[in-house]
Length: 242
Image 1 (cartoon, rainbow, N blue to C red):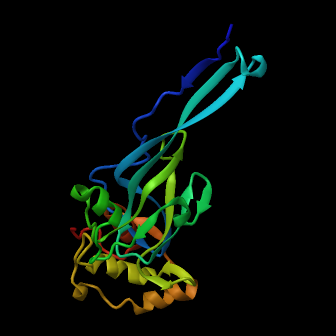
Image 2: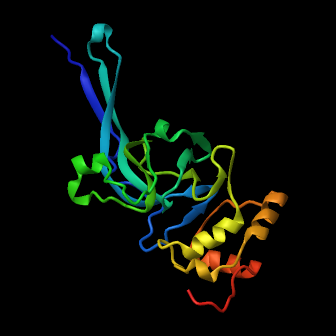
Image 3: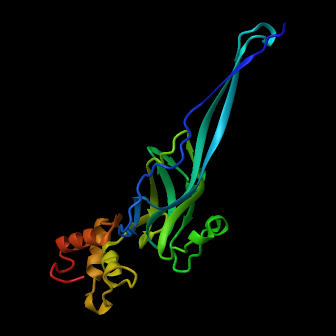
């Protein structure tokens, strides 16, 4: 008489989509002056892949007879995504924070795009999703084609340290002079205000004052927040329309 070994197979539920961190339609694009930590806004995801991992254990039965063969299948997940960071062009994306840990962006599989006005499509998108490939000119972002998620599909909490517009001295003093931030915001053709430089007085004394006190600026702001701050400081009139 021959005896056989029975096989018991188990598998955890297969998850089929990503649980998102932040993805907001119509959210204003922030402007980073100096060096600041920015929470990305997810503007694309795809290439979601579930990879099975099967482990085998055997028990019972002398010489492998009348034993039990246990097969257990679990899954690990990865996805491609793009996090929008803010108005470009910026100087650099220095590092990433995942939950409470700090990483070089390349260690997590991210590539940075600085948001120049000649920026081209991400190569991965052109080859894999050409109909969805956009240049995102004027917007800085980071992208990963296969971000590893482990055995869950939640994206987790990511933020990125960015050196943005008008740093004093890149790599030495990455913060901005407030006397340069104000006219930059008001006269840039790419932001909301679009003022003529002729409407702004001489800020040399204010610039020297900021430098003397070591008063610098590092922040990612959107237009409504900036208007409140500039009006409160007396740098612009609260009665002026935008």
